[in-house]
Image (cartoon, rainbow over all chains, first blue to last red):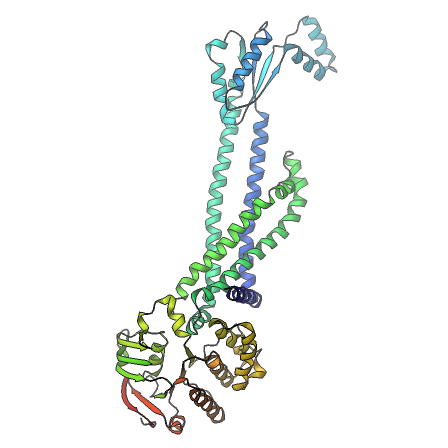
Length: 302
Length: 226
C-alpha cells in the first residue's frame, strides 16, 4: 500500500515536471482562478470595513426636557440597553454637553459671549444610542415613541437622519448581494475554465491512459498520478498567487489607507492568512482534483 | 487455457471481423495465427486481452468468461498477459526504462527487484544503451524491441505478439523469434500473429490460419499456406 502510494506520488511529480508547456498553461489558469478568489476575498474585506466604518458613524440622539431628573434618564438608559439590537448607550448630562461645547468653541469669542448673555445652560441632557446594525434603529426609535416616555423626551433625532440610515442600510445590503452574486458567477466561470484546461490536459494523455489500462494497471494506479499532479499544480498556483499578492498588498496598503483610514489591506491579509489559504486550497486543489476525476472517467473505459 | 467458443465479432454496421471462430489453446503451447491483413488476427488477440468483446459467442481464459469480468477487475486478468502490440503502445512520456518498470510496478514487484530486473530484460532485447531514451527517440526496430521487453518483463502466463517482426530487418526478426521461442521453452504460452511466411515455416509449430474472419485451418506443426 505504502509502496503503491509512493509510486503514485513519484509518478505524479515526474509528469508535473516533464510536461513543460502543459504544466505552465494549467498553472497559469489556476493562478488566475486563485487570484480572482483572493481578490474577491480582499474586496469583501474592504467592503465590510467600509460599511462598518460608516455604521460606526451613525447613532441616534434622544434629548430630554429640562428638569428631568438624572435617575429617570438612567432608568431609561437601562431599559434601552435591554433591547438586544442596542450595542451601546452613552449618557451626557446637560453640564457635560455645555462643557463639551465650551471646550470645542473656546476660541470663538462671539459664540462664548452669546452663551454668557443667555445666562443659563441651553443644552439638554441626552442619550447617544448605537445599534448593532444600520437596520435596527427603527426598533430603537419605536421603543422610544411609547407614550410612557413622552413626558421626559424632548426629541429623537431618528427621523432627521432616517434617510441616511436607510441609504447606508440599502447600500450595505446591496454590496453584500452584489458580492455574493459576483462570487457565484466568478466561481462558476473559473471552475469551468479550470475544468476545461484539465480536461484538455487529460485528453492529451488519452493514449497513455488506455495503454496503462491494457498493461494491467488498476484504475486507481492510473488516476493517482493525475490527482497528485492536480494537487501539486493547485499548491504551486497557491504559492505563486501568495508571492504575487503579498508584496502587492504591502505596497497598495498605505494608498488604500489614505482613502479608507480604518482599513489596512496588508494587515487584513496577514490576519486572515489562514482563512484565505484554506479558501485557496479548497478552490485550487478541490477544483483540480474533482476536474481530474470527472475528466478521467471516460478515459478509463478501455 | 484459452478457449474461443463460436465467437463472432461484427463492427457496426457491416464489417465482420470474426465469423463463428472456435478453438482452444492449451497451456505452454506456441501458436502462430496467420492470415492476410484484415483477416481478424488482431481482433482475436484483442478479445483475449478484453480490449474487445464478442458480438456473439464466448472467450474463456483459465475457464473464466473474459467478458463477464467487471471493468474494475480487468486489470487482474491483463496482468497475466504480456502483449507486444502492433503499434507498440509504449508510454510516450516515459523512458524505455520507465516503460518496463511501470509494468513491474503494476504487478507489485518491489523497487529492489525492479532495479535488477529491468536492466536484465533490456539486455535480452539489446536496448541497454537506450534505457534513458523516450520512445520517440527510438527507431522503429528499437521501439518494437522495447515493446517486447515490456511484454516479457513481468513473466506473464501468456504472451500475445501482434506482428512483432513487422518493422524489423531479417537479422532482428530472427532474434525476436528466437527470444519468443526461448520464453516459450521456459513455460510461457505464446500466441504469435504474423504474416511472415519464413518465420512461421521455420517454427514448425501449431498454425491457425484465418481468412476474412473465418478460421480456415488449424494444424499442429503447420505451415504458412494462404
